[in-house]
Length: 61
Image 1 (tube, helix red, strand yellow):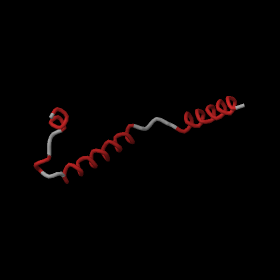
Image 2 (cartoon, helix red, strand yellow):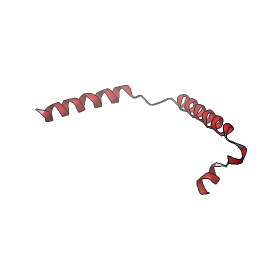
Image 3 (cartoon, helix red, strand yellow):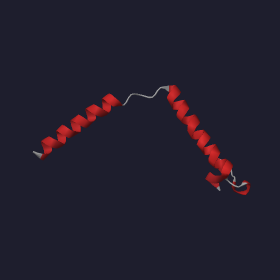
Image 4 (cartoon, rainbow, N blue to C red):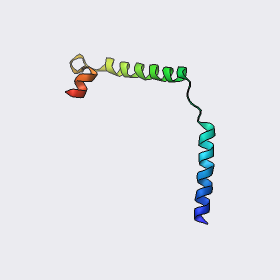
């Protein structure tokens, strides 16, 4: 009985996921990237000058 319920629930969830997840349009992805870039730049602007390092300096410091 439990196995039947698990299979039934799994089937239902898989069906809902495949129907509801459409690929994002390129413009939507670009908008998300722009938003994240602005957030990171805002955080970087609040850092003290002394603490500012490039990405590569932080990565290989």
